[in-house]
Amino acid sequence: MRNPPFVTRALPRAAAAMLALALAGCATRGVEAPDLVPLAAVAPGVQQDMRYHGADNFMGRPVAGYAAPTCWLSRPAAQALRSAQQELEPLGLRLKVFDCYRPQQAVDDFVRWGNDLADQRTKPSYYPCVPKEALFQRGYIAARSGHSRGSTVDLTLVVTDGLRARQVLFGPLADGAEVDMGTPFDLFDAHSHTEDADQSPDVQRNRRWLRALMERHGWRNLPEEWWHFTLRNEPYPDRYFDLPVR
Image (tube, rainbow, N blue to C red; front, side, top):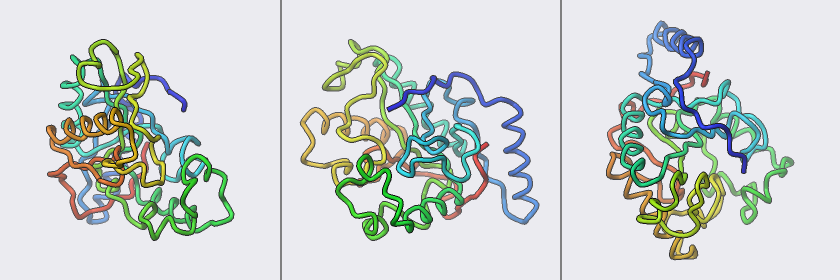
């Protein structure tokens, strides 16, 4: 997997202004604009590897709606991630996010890809044991996503100091590497279930530790995906947004 540069500063002002204009446009159509903020402005210690902006994802290409490789979240969600990151720092660990707010147009792009049964390019890496025609039935692809509400993240842990990280986690813990969670992000398979019994004891402990960390800071895990967390008290529980990521 590629390991892009660590995002350490807030989104450039021009990009922030562009999203503000989009939000204003949404408001003028009689819809309350969501309070979305760039994660880097709130929690600069969180690493960002925004997979759907590039080609390193299950579609094998950039996804519609991702004009920039930037994590945007509702303000409470960004603050809750900052709280989790603050707990991790003394332990030699860091959060890495793969996806945050996801516009509806991206979800629609997922659906188009799922219906194109001729495109099987990424099957060996992302759904080797699942027929593509079964992705909808098994819930891997759907017409709506909680990510579009602005308070759901896909993430993992990265080691910053292996000696300290060994106090709480297990398995190989090389500095700069992702913690071993048994499967890569976005593997469409039962092995991605948080409580998959086929994983090694070390991987099972690592997944449970990540889940417990996130629960302490107000998140709940999706049992089918060890990397997927939604803020329990999300501010927009019934609304799905389509503002592009800029």
